[in-house]
Length: 202
Ligand SMILES: CC(C)(COP(=O)(O)OP(=O)(O)OC[C@H]1O[C@@H](n2cnc3c(N)ncnc32)[C@H](O)[C@@H]1OP(=O)(O)O)[C@@H](O)C(=O)NCCC(=O)NCCS
Image (cartoon, rainbow, N blue to C red; front, side, top):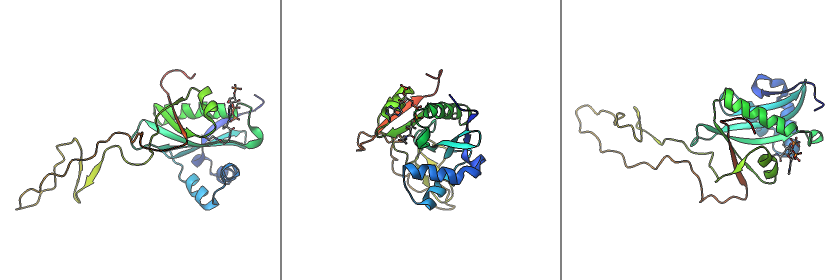
């Protein structure tokens, strides 16, 4: 590759690239600058995290990692983009490999999920396989707030709050199962793909 010093860094550690990132993304997927900046400014050491690809001081690419509440050992990869004039030079491959390292070593995750419409070949070449759709909404363990404490399914030690002098309240109704929202029921035209991060990079 003809690049001098390719690096992948968290955007929130390099806020000087916020506006450039906003332009890079809006050049591909036009959206209000305010909404775009809000999304980029949400980047942090914990998910969501925006990662940027730099060569020396030049911004070449971006991607965003967001949490999947039902799959805490995975994250959802989105907004993968390489600057238009720089595509086809293996920069997307480099970005993805570095992002995987970041997920494995920094975020301690063991899987990456994504969805795509049109870039299936790109991800397949990187070892991603088609998987069932997942939902990035919801929580892994349903929680009922009682006002004084919370009750989590499966934790019998967390009883309902004490009411001095009164009878204990009836038990709560059964909770829905905390399984990932996979869904055969989700209708989507996108292809969902995932890759396990354990083991050597393909
Ligand atoms: C998708 C994208 C990130 C790829 O980046 P890139 O730097 O051009 O990709 P690379 O040069 O690393 O390509 C790696 C391989 O994937 C292939 N590839 C890349 N994009 C492809 C596509 N759209 N269809 C089929 N193959 C593709 C390349 O030909 C190359 O194959 P090879 O290893 O056999 O030579 C870039 O094209 C892009 O930013 N696209 C617009 C935004 C977008 O669609 N992002 C994905 C959202 S899901």
